[in-house]
Image (cartoon, rainbow, N blue to C red):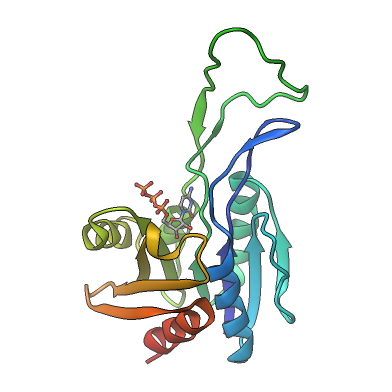
Length: 205
Ligand code: CTP
């Protein structure tokens, strides 16, 4: 299969030296990419900025912003049999990024933010029936309700859900997979490489 994976955070420019981002390390997405290669699949990894080395054998597409990630996904998605969207994409970006470094002034600064594209929702809308779409949900409460809502709203086949405290930034993860029939498959806390292996085992069972 040809598997397209998104991973890592995105960076949304404020000025030449500042950006808005999040705590994603990309470790889960890179573990999935490594596992996909080990299973003999063709893997394209679209990644925001991380400290990780791209796994040997992947087609690596580095991006920075949500808009760049969206462009890469829309360009490459038609060739993919399976899409696994683990990136922590910024939901908002500065509405008016500037090319000169902003100077501090007395008093507070208000940044206007605008929505970015929901890449996963767009892919879900245009998905072919022969494509398998897997999303992620990182939540701080009501894991099941939020995960099932995202699965339905974004037209996914599977969603991998975890509590932020269980996965974000860690070397281990503890997740629950939900499929479109509402069935649940918990994976107990394990190293992210092992979680990746079990995700493939559950989806391809
Ligand atoms: N995602 C995406 N594009 C965005 C935001 C999120 O493709 N602009 C994808 C992520 O890669 C992940 C899934 O959507 O697979 C869930 O992201 P999350 O931010 O948890 O969900 P949201 O739909 O943004 O919901 P909320 O902000 O309400 O939690």
